[in-house]
Length: 390
Image 1 (spheres, rainbow, N blue to C red):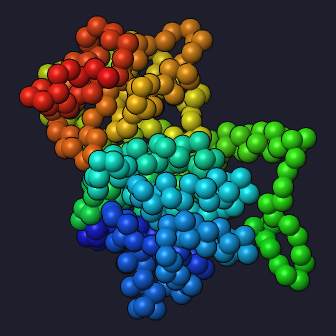
Image 2 (cartoon, helix red, strand yellow; image 1 turned 90 degrees about the horizontal axis):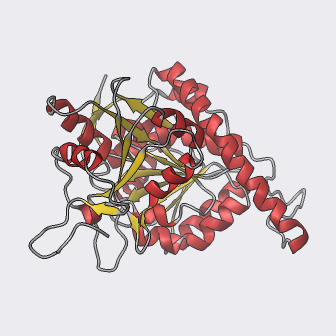
């Protein structure tokens, strides 16, 4: 049975079903409704946890780190400038291999000030050592949040669940919440092998000299790659209990004989899917939903793109002076393979600009055109911006 919930409310319910012991809360648009609704669940005695209202996002990440290290399932949420303020602590959380979950309600990063959606915030922290999973719908946000707790605790790696600000967080949608019994069956009680206990003192996060630092970073890197299989396994296990899968590390939809592929992250997947359904007279193309940005699913991506002549990577962030971020990752993953499609890098929807259904036609036109060798910003306004090439 579907229940109408705003995306933020749905995420809050998903967090509550995971039975966290500590929630560290600081409001920032557009994630504020998540922690607000968790506060209401606590006030209504529907969630028993320590709800800590902190003075900054830096403090929120620090409280979550301490709670998880002390043996308690922990959660927090943030966006944009708040995520950047957390940056120092996020590297610490990952480097200490602390298992916790955070929602990033993706939002543009200032300046100029902008409170609407794109992916620049999470992309800026892609190398912090967190698993990053992107959600295409509010249903995926629910299911991915619950899966993230199991992933974090099984792998001793933190997980960032990325949801598009406003597009998902503030949209009312019919969703299906799993029962508490289903989640309890899926998600065992919290454990952390290095739990801090005053009765058995140990050190977590001691200084590491050059003789061992590289080895620790290497172990972290290998754990991230091992997470690829775990993401698939956890998604399948969740589907076995609830009947819903979220696509593993990536998901491909489209005819087998298609020669064009369109790869995207987040809620734009729904726009492209609907645009494709309404544009029947266009060439057949595969729609590829990239769910895991970190770890980057190189082998799965090579398999998904095999046999394609052209791939358009549509993303909502770019690296000034270097172009599309995900497109560069795709090129790296395909380097040295026997059959490499042309990769077209396309940026749309920066700062919350609307992506229309006609975007499907635009990206297909880009795939059929000459190789430009540069990132194309598809939704520039010709009246005041001269060209669409960055």
